[in-house]
Length: 437
Image 1: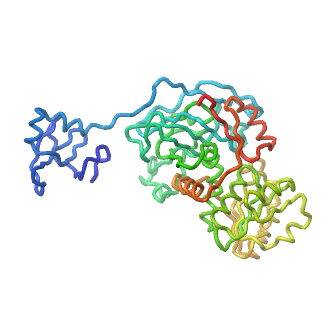
Image 2: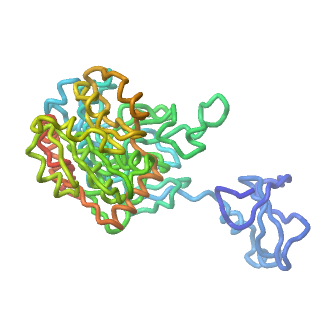
Image 3: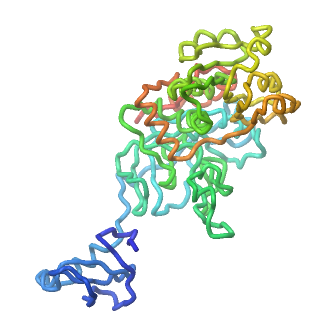
């Protein structure tokens, strides 16, 4: 059994505790010139130098110090958590207030991040206006966070070190069996942590230690290390930030549903989220990529992103008939219950798949199941992505040169940027930057 705290060789469980100092213990099969010592902190055994060598140092303290837990490392300890706070539904109209806030209580598995970039996601607007139910005001939104690790807990995972460029997406934690009636969680055990029933969102929720989750439109962010992702070299921070939610939300179902060679992929709603669908469908090697949106004025831009064709549902009069049964996989990013779902289902070939990733706050979908029956069509959904999928997405982006369409704006301009997102102005994603960084 390995000692998670110390990792100083091949450990085994010690059954003897001899007090608060190291003491040699006789055990069989010990290599020549070495002996077993019991750790006073973990009650475990390891192999160290011989007793004679240790005596030359005049004390067992050196061996004991080797076994002490690593201390939390930090670059500074005088920073404050400040950010754009929404206090009510009117905050989505540009009424957020810059204030200090209290992060979750520190745990040794945590990482503090000095925020350099924070992408604006449609979810920010839904939450600020309580579109998905009453928001837990006061709230700091932003879950596409990139920055520098300035404090790393002694038990942090992922090999994160001070000064690393890291990111956090829409999820801050999952249960990993905590609170589960069976003592384990099937989703977490299988690596599908984004489907954990006790998942903790990066803002608008509560950590397992009771602390409120606060997002990244701020100076600093604190997050459990399991959901802190290293940003690879070759990927700019302003490009990585919107990928942490917007990117992986479409990358995950594209990959899971087999978008690649031999497939025709349709992306419904080519906006901030949907433009990632076009980029990643192309990067994954789909034979044909079709962008589908209401307005005809996006046609040229969507084709520049790599789409082979574009359908304007407002401008192309017979689009549903002319493109019937032509697509294998459709990813819908639309967050409106008024979209022409019936017609979209008719675009699918036999055994095609319609994946909904947009989450409307204006009512429920309504459609007739005829297309599902006639074409053995599947209708399903997908939610964000796991840390492993984010890392895969980053690697693909570096290899294939995926370049999102990003507009950078100062963090101080957050209120105006939120209003502009509501008006549909971004082409195609806004990223807030802490200019003093």
